[in-house]
Image (cartoon, rainbow, N blue to C red; front, side, top):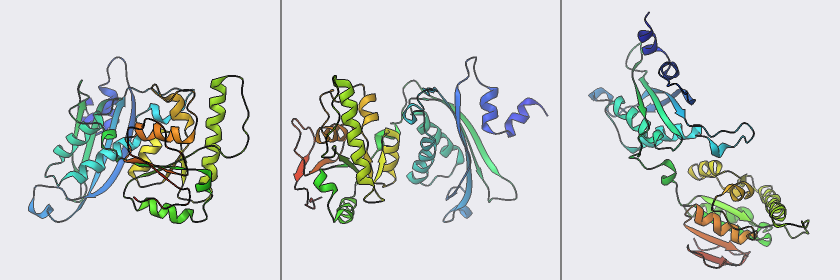
Length: 308
């Protein structure tokens, strides 16, 4: 069997290796991902679904650091799955070729994606697999907006310590979930003494860690409250309807245009997060509104059920 024939039937990762340039890129892959899809140009394929298998390999300009182990510095596997989900939900298509091209284009809109191999196969059209495989390279100026641009606008809710201790906290969470927007909860430090450092930067870390300790106190009160610290986790939670409790250290310390060293209060950090994520609005339960807010901010008593 010639190399060309072997590669034609090999996994897309083999084609990626065989056609790599002098400076090979890292690769991530999704293998044997099956979905029930209504697709096809024949009348018999309309009004019914069939099994479709996806194999995707993405060559990436990785920023992974062996010492950092940071999920925000890589192209997440979720990017591939989300690209498939979004294109399948967009409209019914006749051709696998069209679907493959749209999935590749969407993945290549990610700033770390360099080249994408997409193989899609129909599994129910006979005792065989019918499919297509394409390869696309990232354009210098992507035509498609990034997946991040399609993120929903969250509802950011700051909970004072009195609000964290509410006996009706489950009812409050039910109320917030009914608002129809992803919910990110923010807290301040607990009402206990904190260590005092001689310099601003160590003190900032102490203050941020105090907030994160209080985030875990909130998480222990209801299983729906999941503590997250990375942008990737927050993005995933928003897309999947999960309530997040924000642990701020990572995003604040990694941000190029983050809040100043003097900004350590829970309300001010919640405001910064709300602006960074283009929140629908910021609701403060028991907190004080920060100065100079550029988005809707509402203040309510700690025991209130805010109007949403």
